[in-house]
Length: 150
Image 1 (cartoon, one colour):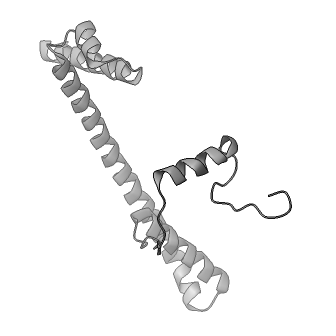
Image 2 (cartoon, one colour; image 1 turned 180 degrees about the vertical axis):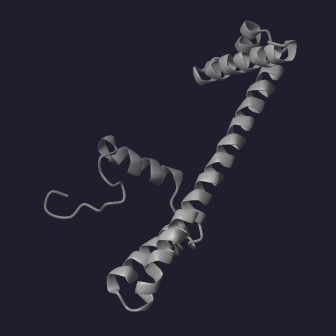
């Protein structure tokens, strides 16, 4: 193994250990000390770089998988489309489900809109009283008790 390959292998191993330590809850001062980083900041920067590189790689792979899946959906849609256009209800349903999957795959659906009309006010004390009145969080704090037991 060449010197540069050996150095890259050492860096990768140290980064792997540093990430494992972060996941275990070890602080960056300790990571720097145990793994030979020059400072807490150097350890933090190295972990950030490793995680960013890994996330970029994962995003690229996910994008490739989306593209492959989209091509599969397109082929299936092309197969059922002529029957759907002729009025075959089963083909129409299948085509509609395929289109829905493509929309979900690419995030093309407009998000559901939530229209809130807030006219009242609640204080922190009111909120705490509601939370305290709810035993173990099992019941809906906004529920109103009804009946003779209330």
